[in-house]
Image (cartoon, rainbow, N blue to C red):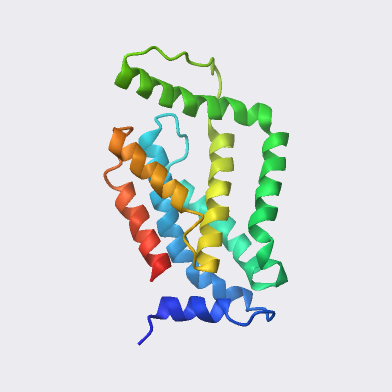
Length: 193
């Protein structure tokens, strides 16, 4: 007997040239919320300057996913991920001056971690007056693209780099990822089920 999640995904993916009904993809939104909770929890616990709370991050990712899922129902489903990455790159370039400070804040967190582990002094960037909200929203948009692609296609290839990065951060002791990592793994199991 097939599980409900896998039969839903297989019915969504079946049909070749046919288009699925856009609202059927919204049933994958709870799995997207679990994955988003894991990813934003990892970022919140690993980087002290991450400026988005976990519930807000889950909300942002779910809104992006709800907007992207209907695109997978149409003929554009093969172009959603590449087109989204190109669009995200253009938005990042347009907002570079505002996002640069946020990315440098995240780098400074990682630099402080390296200094504590190796004893070698890493130089910090001047981020006076910067906040990481624009950088955080851009990263959440990227996570949304990857999560939506993984859920709509049933393939976990796109979020796997994030999982390996989170596991690597846990192994080397960067941040305290006690609850977000199991939540992220549970989200991946929801995708595979």
